[in-house]
Length: 235
Image: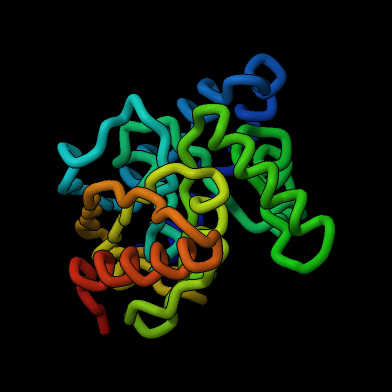
């Protein structure tokens, strides 16, 4: 059943991506329709996979403000779990390489989410500035601080990218911990197990004043400490 759930989830994802392409030109500016369809996709995929989402800490966040949500990354399920579980207009920051995926990647490229070029040089800086610009214009964004999914169920070291964006945009960071997704769908696996995934939101952390580099490092250390406190290592 696990591989079958994965296959059906992929088919549903392609169908929703095609739907996004149909409506994308009506909503390029605000991105609200795009995100509403993304939430419908997320709920559908989780239902198919037998995954239940529980959220703790919603009372700590004001959803009429914009933030940089920084999360750990354990599974491909993390994206639908967060999109379905957090009642905010979140714009996901994703790697540009996903654009090559037929239909799904096209929808991402034309939609409201933000592609990041993970290389070096002008293109990488331009994608960074795009993310910062969207935040300053009132959007909240989601970034995975580890850069890639864990391969052993343990919390990894964080990379600076998410904190560079937060420091330059000058908006608070919300530490977001995802527990339980690793055991349901591991990296390089195509078998999904039903179960419960918990999201833990902590209080927003303001960007420290002073030197920008020092602010980034201070944010990274504090957010890693908060997520580490909530994170449950999975074997």
